[in-house]
Length: 240
Image 1 (cartoon, helix red, strand yellow):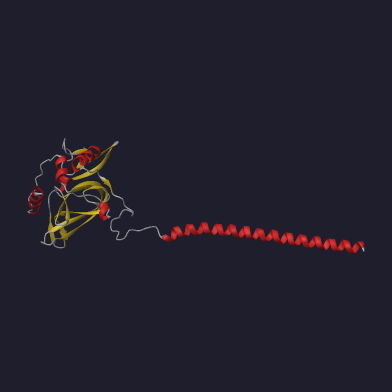
Image 2 (cartoon, one colour; image 1 turned 180 degrees about the vertical axis):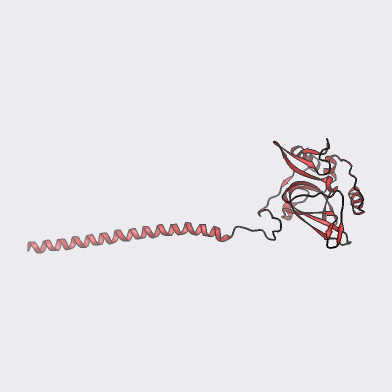
């Protein structure tokens, strides 16, 4: 925690942030949680002390430590120091930049009821498909021989060993939120109702056809009976 707060202090002072490569196992140990997901969007807000922070929104697919199942959430907001709001502009070296839809894995710390990106860009990894493997590529040191690229399968084993829990799949009953979409669009109920109504209409049509067939047979029998009766009466008169 002390290392994290010191790092934020250095960043807010606008000095060049110096990162020292750190084993990923140490980041797992020091983090309050971590998650894998897709970057959605960001916005800058002003905090209670007047400083600026950039809120980054992510759609989670897996997580540890965030209790997404308990809170029923599949999106998370991660804060980073700095940003641009109106006439205020605070640039912080080391803050990661993602493109909408990009798949990432982030370590986070919980400070004053907010999630903050742990170690800025050093605690951020891009999730890359490399042949048949899925690899985590560090945002700050992508070429580092030990910490720059990590196999996702090996990483998940380390998370389970250190945290005592595997990465949990985040279940979502909603469609992924799109950039600038204020409400999640669902298939209108009338669509499914229309399909059900079509099936019902066909059943009613078949029932009507069967009913009409029954009536036609009934009147045919009545007509034949009437003709037969008239024929018998004519025969009797002829014999008289």
